[in-house]
Length: 109
Image (cartoon, rainbow, N blue to C red; front, side):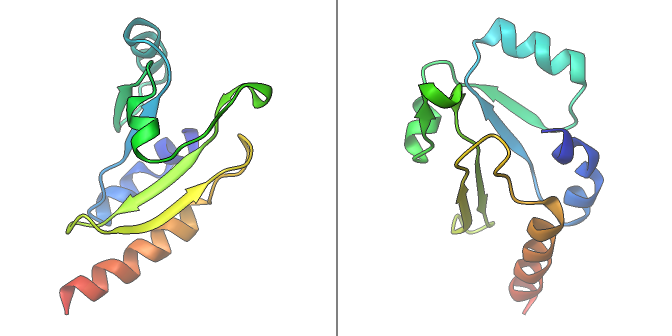
């Protein structure tokens, strides 16, 4: 999440809203969110309902919810769905921002 926080302004310039869904309960989530002062939206999902809707995996042997990055355009079309195999398996912001630039140019035409 820190990489999203660091590049939040770039995502805003690309007309993109970041939404993070986390497995913690409301109290734990709020405490964590407040400590880090993230600039984007976060939603606690302790029962995994949102995770299940998007096919995000929970692997107990890998300490919990695997990362998932899903990019949905303004028309509701999924443009990118990356399901990480570990906590380190996350697409770099630069790659996502390049895709956003391409999508935004397509939608301007």
